[in-house]
Image (tube, rainbow, N blue to C red; front, side, top):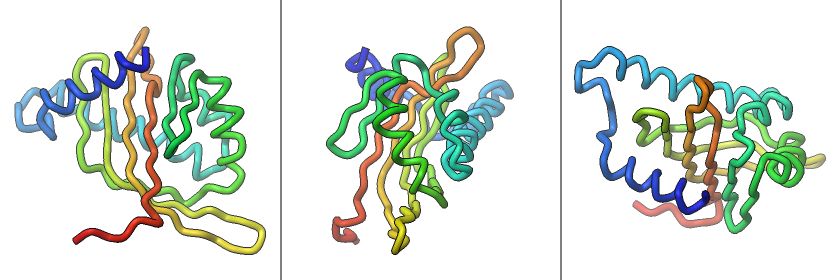
Length: 157
């Protein structure tokens, strides 16, 4: 399943244009809003420290790549990524570089910033992200998250 999701993401990234509004098809223009609203719900869950809202967004078979860690399935994602993260992460902002929707697959990729609130300090993090959504039974669920922290990497100009 992991290989299928990654292959699907690559096919979509290669085969789709950056925006769908250029086609003039009204149904595709509405789809762009759907990707943005899907992402908004995910971010709101994190920024409101609401683990139940976050987990409701994930598909049962979802995977999360977080730097060098891989979390498979909803339960592992909840236990090892969301539960510890929701306590300290906030002020998450994303800056989409590429997003689209094609049938039952939607994706978004870009950069993010966030705050990590510790008892004695607030740390800033920045990185890259990719989100892949899948529509099943008229319901969109998050199937794949890839987060890469680049805070410690030098800025390339």
